[in-house]
Length: 372
Image 1 (spheres, rainbow, N blue to C red):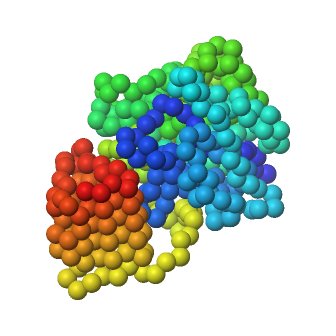
Image 2: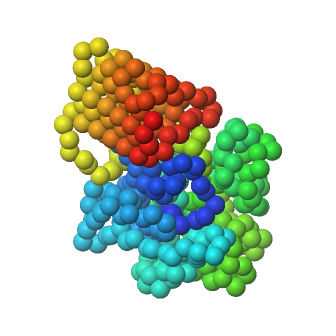
């Protein structure tokens, strides 16, 4: 008989901020590949793992996530025995140092205590990956560990993953420390902020953090717990993206335009669910040219699109060229405009200027509703 756990998706931490996009929505609500939202990936992992009791923690600007998740039926959650429950938390207006995930759990501690499952699997809302959480849970139970955390080996920790934690392991994959990645070495084990533990241990860590420091996060508590508890590491393999900056967001989307990478990540036996939006197909006018791009529905394409992601209801004007860029929904790119290495937010109108160009390592960002 499978071990039973409920899921927690943490959107309430204060340590990650993506410039520009974050001004209008939480990371979980970011558009990804034009079709998905980032939060679709952890919810789908829970659903595919047979875990259909999920808590989603929210603080600032929750409307877009609440509307997107809705009843949760589109995630293949069994509505009779399962549910996706929104867990709201109030931001502290005096200082962001108090807006931690621990604070969010404390505000909803009664709901956690009432959950009938013996275990909890905690996942972040700012990472994109595929993982069977039931396998992770079974491995945790069989090991006898107090806590099991998911990590991913990378060789670009100097350039990327700067907002993430790194994990130091011993030869038996016991976790010796969890600390912030300072970019001092390229080869690192990146913590995926994904943990398995008993509900009892989870509640103990929450209450201990309350006693020890109001500024502690769950990651801080697990780092401290390494000295007194049995904390194990479990290596994740496959595609992995951590969205901790605008550069990371841009790079993660661009990586999945590669056919081989996308085919390895998206598998029929492990579907990623999302809210369906019915609309007419995109229209391609005479002279339009599209190569290696993802184009969503309801658009009008009159110009050239290369190696880009185009959201719903986007208009690319006659003679316009869009290269290596992400254009979010309802944007209007005027005639003759040239855009390269940019993220264009929703409802933007580019009419008066004819060139937006940046470097691929530092993409340009045009804010929501702007007129250029």
